[in-house]
Length: 181
Image 1 (cartoon, rainbow, N blue to C red):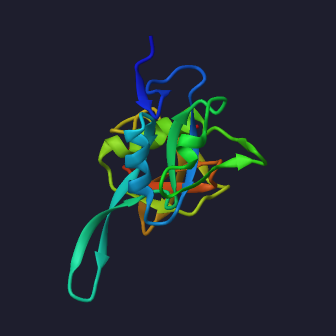
Image 2: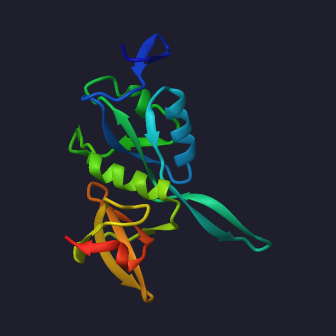
């Protein structure tokens, strides 16, 4: 039996099965955390990857958690079920779709971003790139991930991409952790 959350008389599954895939949810800027929190409260499995960023104001500098993919969060959902609870969530604008059909995000891409967040390594948003050497990370906290190797400011970086959003993130790694694929 699937545990369920009751919301206005409807049952929403809160665990994954074959029908529940990851989808990118487009949200209003600066409302990513609010939308993620409300979706979690409705019983959905959500994922909002963030990174630590220094923000400077006129009178102070503060470290804040900022989304790795500004304007997006990810939610595991069965799109054949009712989508209204997701689409009526404060801040949610739409589900990323091809035409009127929501397009799932690859499980491998989500698992890669989750591993990057869990690793604790400092990550940053990065422009998506089509070219570069594909590498497999063999050592360190990201062992098993594949990505694109780039060199920035004489530092070795791994770029992980979400092809559906045409967005990427980068993380600094040790060069000896990676080998060409």
